[in-house]
Image 1 (tube, rainbow, N blue to C red):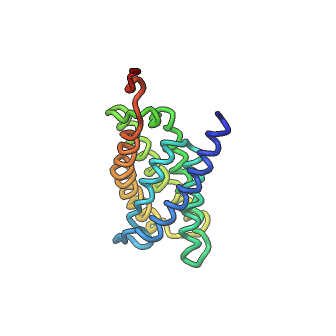
Image 2 (spheres, rainbow, N blue to C red):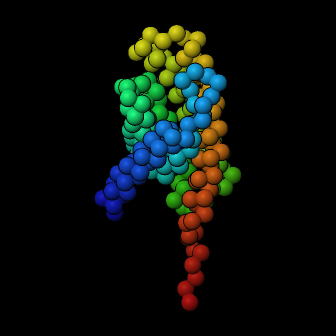
Image 3 (spheres, rainbow, N blue to C red):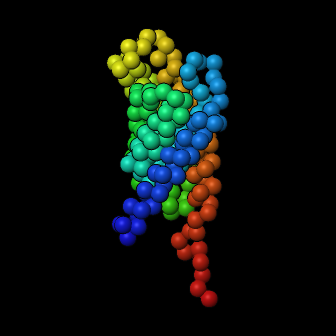
Length: 183
């Protein structure tokens, strides 16, 4: 059974990274903050990290964000690639508590999902990304912290609202234990 789970996780990483890339590259909504978009790919990251855990979440964020940056013809902006991976890992750490595979997404689990997303995005975009931007690229602090605050707010909103709707839709497709009667 463990082997089957590993295969599912590898497939989820591949599909998740591809979806993260497509949404981040082709569905990004421009924002008033330079070099920052409203990014719908964090909804998919939230769903898949909640389903498959921190390793899958981290890999999806890392690979997907690196592919987005590479597709623009330059090298990856490592501080943001690392932050996307960080966000996936943090949300994934809450996967056992969410246990979306049981088909339940009630109030308690919604709260856990919201808290995990907000924690991941706020720490990631307000602390990790700006600090790495300053350390790696010598970017001006006021610029990177402005970008980080905007990214934290917009990515939290898309992760919570769109990601929450994706989790809800997913859990509705799962048959509940004891819902099938023997005839």
